[in-house]
Amino acid sequence: MKHYKHKEKDLPDEKANDILLFMDITKLWTNTTGNTGTVSELREYTVGGVTYEVDGKHVILRPTPQEKAVATALSKKYGKTVEFVPQIMFPQGIQTPDYLIDGEVVRVYARK
Image (cartoon, rainbow, N blue to C red; front, side):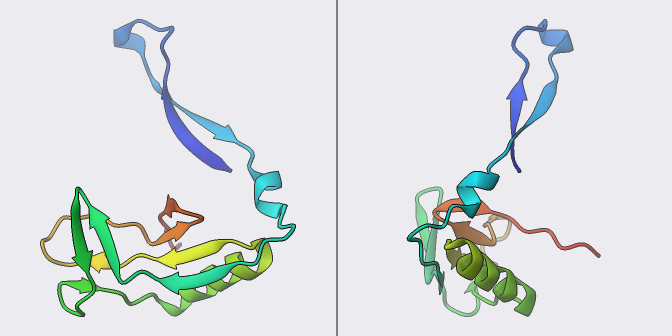
């Protein structure tokens, strides 16, 4: 399921709530006709107009074995193009996604 937040516009401002809506994307993901997926690692990533290149210290690219397994499964089973996004360690506070899947930002949260 893909989700997004939507501000309820029909309610007065003091009663406006964020409502989480869901859209079923199962058919989009399972229709793999003619798609061959790939897994790759981005060597640079742009945030706020600044491009950060992997240097092994300030910008790193170290996907976990679990992240690699998920990327491989998505690529093989669903024909997705999965790109690992580097982590920006310095300057601190810059958020990056775990993956780009078919160009869309994806963050993965592991259960503990």
